[in-house]
Image (cartoon, rainbow, N blue to C red; front, side, top):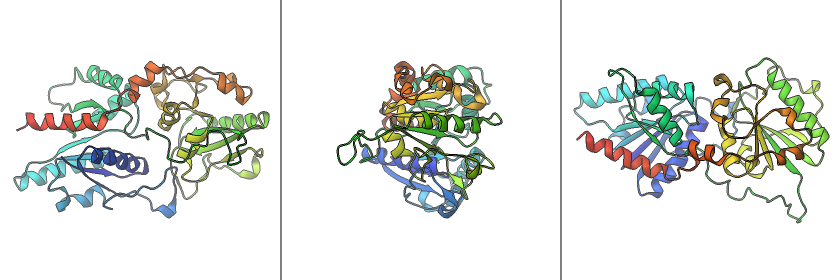
Length: 360
């Protein structure tokens, strides 16, 4: 098959490059296309900027010969309205020249459940196939869409695993807790912070104060705060943050740009409220804590972590060594949300082929 994967953001671009590499490894032809909304000079990215094949937006791609030989087009845009517009225009264009359109597929680069999952599905009625991470999501999707009216299109839903996250730590990033001289390195806690979560007023300030307190009480640890998102024009994580108002211990700091993945690979422990990127250190068997102080709510993004066994209050940790004594991840939960599914690209190919056969 010939695939064209279209993205528009750093997370989506990162995911598409990974998917393209896996599809090529299975003998498929794959082209990655995209353009991020900001220029590199305007953004401090959390991820390395991976090269894509063609620098075009989805709108610019329409009507070019690049789509002529595509059997399947993957749409991974942050703006689902733009996705819908592309799908409508692309199919209309094919109809106008009496050409058979390629199958359209896509999905969110996250592990949404409940209300967020049904929202993601309803926003993707324009697709022929929607990728979700695990069997849990497939079962939820079936239950949620069972009573949809007949006039609503139901895309096929396929569990493809955690295809949008790196399965292994970056090559060369693991130190094993040893320095180049063989001495044991300080343990590192990575606080994986999000753009708008926690949503409570003062929630970010509360979290930063706790991190600095832990750093002071645990001088044998390093505490690094890293964003799971890009920051435009070096905007501070906490609105109106003034470094002069804060006293940082020598073992606490904010991460440098593009260091999120190496930090997650090398850390002894990771904490977050609900970042999807926390699944990377969880799968890499790093000790992890999902902060429960802000509750299990859709607007906090914490519903996906319910049942993980990782959710605890900050007060459960007095000294950072306490983190290492917390329970490990519930393996059944981890498997159900996608970790047990390691053949996602192969399942995608087979599912698209089956849809194509039914439409002949």
